[in-house]
Image (tube, rainbow, N blue to C red; front, side):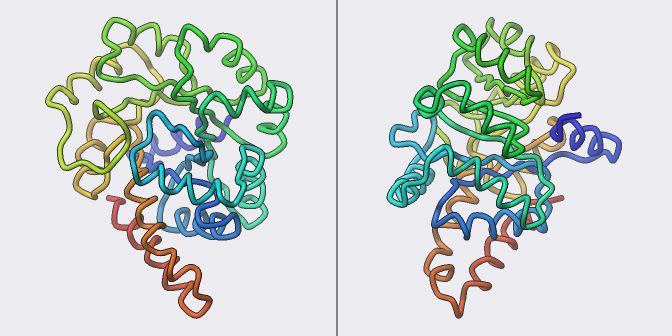
Length: 268
C-alpha cells in the first residue's frame, strides 16, 4: 500500500489530522535539508512535500520564491530533489514524500527517466500545480502504474469542475484555501468551509487544505473540517530566518531546534 494511504488510514483510526509541511529542497543546501526533514518528523510531521526549486513558480509567493532562488544558485535540480528523499531515508526518515514540481522540469527530464526516479527514490506522491485536468491523463496513468499518487489541486474558483477534478484523485485532494499564490495569511475567503464541504461531497478519499496556513490556531481550525493541513511558507520562512545559525557550526543545532519548535507547536 502507498505510504500516503497508510498514514491517512492510521490517523483516521486515531481520530487525528495529518500535518503536511512543505520544504524547498536545497535551501540552504541538501545536507541541511536532510537534517531539517528529520527535525520536522520528530516535531510531528506526518507527510512531507519536497518542493523542487523553479525559476517561474506561478503558484508560489515571495517566501518560497526566495527559497527557490537560493536553491537554484546551488544548482538544485529535480533529480537532486528525488535523491534527497533517498538521503533522508538513509538518515532514518519514514515519512511519505510528495514531490511538488512544475511541469517543465518533468518535461525536460523525460517521462521515462522521471518515473524511474520516483520509483528508485521512494516518492509516494506528486503535485504539479500548472498541469490542468485536461492535460493530465498521460501523466496520471503513468503515475498509477508505479503506485505514485497524482494529487490534484482544487481551488474555490473550480466550481463546476470540482467533481471532474476529484473523480480520479488518489492519495488526497488538495484544497487551495485562498485566492492567489502561497503565503502566510491572517484570513481566508469567506466561503472556505462551504467550499471544503462541497469537495468532500464528491469524494471518499482524504481532503487536505493548504495555501496561507501559518499558525497553530489556523491548523486547529482546519483540522476540524479536513483530513490534512499543509503548512508551507511559514516553515520556509523559519528556514530562511535560521540560515545564519545553520551556517555557523557552533550554532547549527540552535537553528535546527528553532525550526523544530515552530513545527511542534503547530500540532494539536
